[in-house]
Image (tube, rainbow, N blue to C red):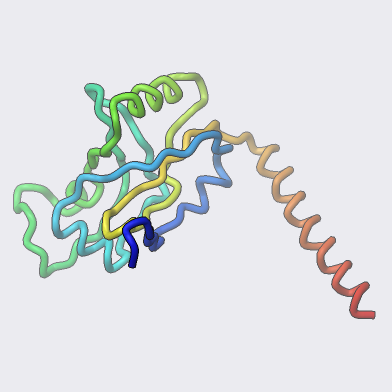
Length: 162
């Protein structure tokens, strides 16, 4: 394998994010994890469907990212089970990326959500999407468009088969 070869392996994809939000910008970030969290992520025991990014003290954190722990892992006894699974994890971003992210999040209606979690050259990365929440009628329009595409493909397929 050459130096420039990048190996990417998807862990989890948040399909709900594209349904709930119109994603305008995507950012890649690293995550600060404990050893047991890394082992659980390797076993794909992670859920990012409700996770979002928040800025505290000029640092970015991801909240509501649920990493299930195994009984064999030794973890701190003072944290209860739910707190340690859903704790806020620090994101590794540059200062200008954090500033850019916070300026977009502070606008009305915008939020930053986790889109996907993956391994990039054995380093755990998360893709963050900055988007605006969709209204109910936007979701209905998107569903109608998708159904029309499916019907159109079926009719074309049947037309060419005859």
